[in-house]
Length: 295
Image (cartoon, rainbow, N blue to C red; front, top):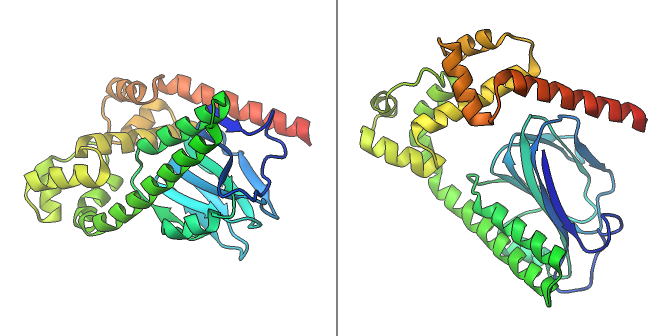
């Protein structure tokens, strides 16, 4: 797990205050590849400032005051206004998300102008450009060069504009996404062995050249890479959540050769399936031990 953040102040305490400034960034940061499902936040009375959360990978469960629960998946964005219940937790391995806490009398107008609504979930395709804005804000706040507060606000405005445009672009892609649904459902149900691009295109009723172009435009990946990544994510879930033998997992996902499956797994995760399982179990045990100590 990687964690980076930046706060105005010596530590993370007392830095969610409201401000009378035009716009102010209280703190920002991100968690990358959270491997514990026990991580979560519970603020029954919310906070005095605003918070925007962008999910890059995995899944997050968000609870609302009316008792409803929503699952945020990669590309989802939510904004909490001041005083709103904040109860959320990671519910999938390797969950990554970024946040910004902001305040100021222009905050409400900024949220409205960019087309966001508090406590409503918006969706975009995951775009790595978004994390560069988070990195830039972190660096400005940490280094505190002249006018760094103004620069951090400037980056945040660019960030909000970027997200708003991504959401508008996403709505334009919805019709294109619908054209790909037969192939996407087939890949979801049978990520491996892969069908040919011609077979996927035939399911969608379009020619293969247009299918490949449209698929990359909508998902950002080739059909082969999309299917491979999906099968590896399923493999990681089975390895971390079950005691199934690696060979059985390989077979259940359509890989007849366990050695080939292990090579693909290592290329995707950077470690072997057995190493991945050990790391997951060690982390879970560590979190469980810490939870007992904190009781």
